[in-house]
Length: 329
Ligand code: PMV
Image: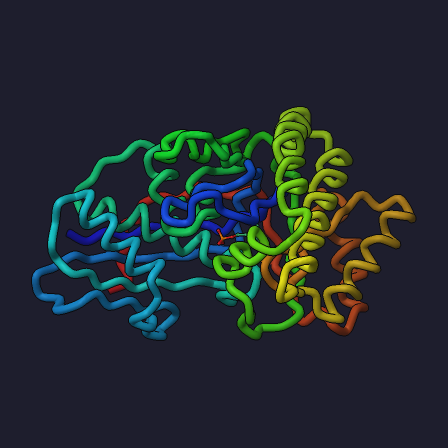
């Protein structure tokens, strides 16, 4: 009853921020993402009568007992499989956790795939996305390889709120996302708490959410026809609309650091010059730059001249969540 899975983080090109059902994690909006090959979590899950209680180690640090989302997710999978054994879970990421690089997405996607296999469940990709969604919403998109959409759905039971692939990585191998690491500090406001505050207090929350459906459709079409300038325009606007909602939340959610704004202003001036790129940002201060392979050397050269950029992580469209042979313990 032991299995290991690898999952990549994903970066939203059309953003999700807000749940219409907090227990099932049903979103107010559909979203679109790219699964990123460079931002990886490997997780081994073992269910055994020898374990007295659930134990979770993430990058050698024991997860606090009150970390309800991960522990709740393990319990959900145990119930689905009809087993009682406690779990030992060891997880390793190759990038900073809780700093706006979607570590929860890769982490919960990897746990979902490893734990269901360890528990003896055989689920379809769609069922895995529905399950991963209940661990951490955006995790459902990390199950799929390449480009994916998470359909908001309308059913109360959430069965139509799943992620599916728009196109595999081979469809657009030149697509790149360069994440600028501006701080290694953990974020102050969790996305779970933050988005609930936004739904409750942002005066234009629902106006924003209503724009996401056409954004998601337009992004899907732009990806399918490999129209990079359309992707840039929709992605950047979607990110800024989401951050506008965050800013207008009570209390305000401000993920921008001075360094984030510095990078954003550079990207805006590069766009003025005609360099094909766009920025996006999530629940943390790191700025991610979308570009094509041919422009990576030029953009990397320019980023080296910005002192706030500690380092960068470059990603291309990556593989979906999958089982691996080699266990971490
Ligand atoms: O699913 P969560 O709780 O990791 O929320 C993710 C929210 C954003 O990253 C800010 C946007 C998105 O769609 O990924």
